[in-house]
Length: 206
Image (cartoon, rainbow, N blue to C red; front, side):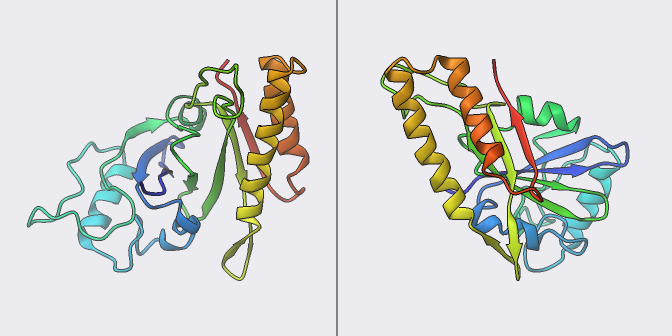
């Protein structure tokens, strides 16, 4: 199944290149493995990764991801981008799947990595009358508190949000909330449960 994540690398023109990692959301591991020495994660720096990163960050469209023997190597992040030269708002609204992608990372030009957990606003699994919900561009991003290199309360946060969605889904079935009311309540709950030092980004696919 994997623990899918998207990673946005800031370019010199202040837009982003977007990359995918199949296991990058597990324990928010990319927070530590993406560094200047290992721009696509992994334990060992490689010339292939550095050359690809330098070219892509300058906006060059290059074939990436394979070494001279046709192997992908051990990077945590796919070297070949999913999209290039996109604004952050476009990524959140048109590329980030809040159901499939468990985490999202922003890597700035100084290799400061910000890790976000994704919280999907879809209610189709929590309500008997909601038949479908959008996945792309429909949810919340929230940063995680770190202590000694470990994400604190990450599991509790996701569990609490899942519990809130079950309650909201029941309220939709009972007629207490319509769709807009349910989404507004979810967004307000996420904001209220976030500590002042954390960051929240809300995107809705209306």
